[in-house]
Image (cartoon, rainbow, N blue to C red; front, side, top):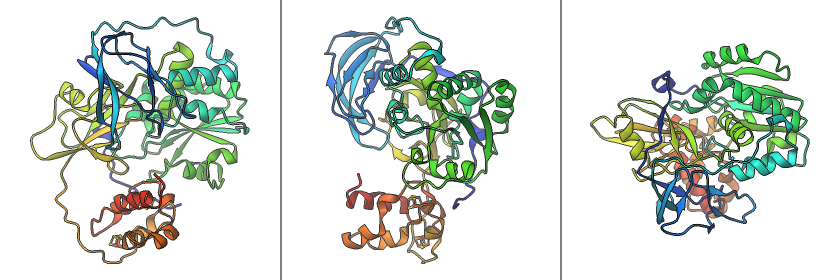
Length: 419
Ligand code: SF4
Ligand code: SF4
């Protein structure tokens, strides 16, 4: 397996307590579910909405309802930056800070639900892949194939991000309870919780709690980027080669923060309207993890936790390896794992020296240098298969000429019609 130990800056943001930011004056609820941005909006200007109320629905195959994260008044629809830097529609709500919630019907013990009930609850609560994928979880569990193994991915490959680490440490018993229920309901043989060697505390905590959960194991994996990638995890933990999707090998992989969202949906029938986000990087005064409402502006959270240091800094969402540089206008979504404030790089990009390092490191065996050289030749570009790129960023990280190869490969993907 190809990979590289990358700089580890996780210790910066690990604190004892998690701050909660529930006072944004306005939230900007993004109208997006997976790749779908076409919604039937169910509220109008001046409507009063409750926290957890459905604001919009869609009949897209991968869709789920969009909920309000605050109680307050609808002010309109505005475009704001999404994590990939595109502009998307958001419903603007003025927060009244009363946190008035929708009444929730009776709830069962979480392992007493049927498969159909779980899928319905996950869909209604808008549970998605919280590691950045935004893929609807009900769709994943709705597979007709047998699931033999559930892998709970707590590897958290990016260097600064510790939101999964934080949730695993602060909600250990809830996470184990949820996994146990999922194993029972979906008749899954076993679960492996994968953590990085680095995360020794999480392993010790899990061992303490694991007691009678005989079907749940913990495995630590090497501190090598891109070990958190599903296919590598399945290879490392089960020695199985995945071609397309892990389910072809009867394995379902869920991120640990997603497991906690499943807990909230099943135990409390809560829609996913907040999440833990890491705010870190050399440019931030007080790096930490913060519980933030979906739709909060990143700039509001940064102000709340003490702001940034003086100097030329850039904001990168979801980590320096896989994330994107964003502006102040960007909003927190369900798939925002972290916001990293870093010094603007002064490294100058120079000409390729044909060292071949980018090709040798690529986990999906692409040749980024050739993709760069043939960006404008669609016929050759197609043969070089850029759509296989998993956007891990290793090629840019390793390149001695500081060429932004990842960006080049991603735009080549678009050229051959992948996006
Ligand atoms: S080409 Fe894509 S998959 Fe390969 S190293 Fe670069 S970013 Fe990662
Ligand atoms: S790593 Fe950079 S310098 Fe080396 S071959 Fe690839 S693009 Fe060229």
